[in-house]
Length: 386
Ligand SMILES: Nc1ncnc2c1ncn2[C@@H]1O[C@H](COP(=O)(O)OP(=O)(O)OP(=O)(O)O)[C@@H](O)[C@H]1O
Image: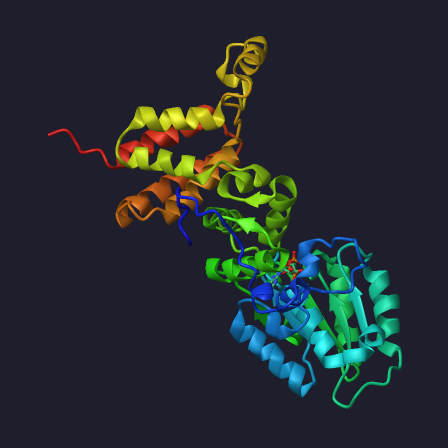
């Protein structure tokens, strides 16, 4: 992952488009921007830059190659695409359907997602009705039923699909997108080709973000892009949404602005805390923790009144108030990326942070819990007294 560098290289995204004599709209097209929005209406960038062709999909290249072959040859099998949110599963299915069906898309595709009713009645009526419908298609092409977020369909509705998928398979194919393929019942899984999408790498996110920055003429720093990538954790939708929110809120994408938008602890502060633990500087580590936690909970003060006083007196000074879950998960992610800690200590740190994370999730998300974690991290590298 690109390291968060304290030195900020301020720059304006070079407008290669205009340098090459291209307009910014053609740069946007290069980044895959959809151009059918009415003038003056700004689409969310995740929609504006949703890939329209399989070629434009970033990452998971082997799986996307398989889809391209299907798009070329036709005769699409029933497919399940599974993976974490925001990595291009739905987009891939939509691109595939467009490439297979072209202008017949509107007539020959039935798209249902979690916002539609998808109980057993919909399977019996709408899906069956669509499967029975006659549509003239090029040879070797079938109608497509796209079931997005299929893992939230009821068991009964999934059971009801079994026969429909078989009876109408000569004219209708099914494409499921889901986060967890194990939530799709076994009989459906066995009827489908299962494709798994992995989370996107930092380089893949970076490349796409830079393309969008160029198309939108966004002002950014390297540190800002690294912060977007860090907070997105491989989720392209999150990265693009956070980019747009930061631009809308601040006009300039740097680390501080991004972390304000995503409202998570600044990794540079958390990194300093972890390094202090590694060096055995417990007072400093606890002080950083206090700054991040401070005023997060009245429990560290004698009474709520005292806590309110504390808030008033120190308002604007150290009002971070991050929750235990935010802090412990950032500690985990930051520890993974610190290069200056030996591999052995890193593993020990991650183990300790993992145990604390578990306790926090069990309900004990107190300041004391995190202080205990810091103390144990400091102990890892301490030499035993001789
Ligand atoms: N691989 C990718 N390449 C380019 N853009 C992507 C990719 N993945 C996601 N995006 C961007 O994120 C948006 C959401 O992607 P998509 O709907 O395909 O996610 P998903 O994997 O189906 O997520 P969910 O599981 O939440 O439905 C797209 O409109 C696009 O802008």
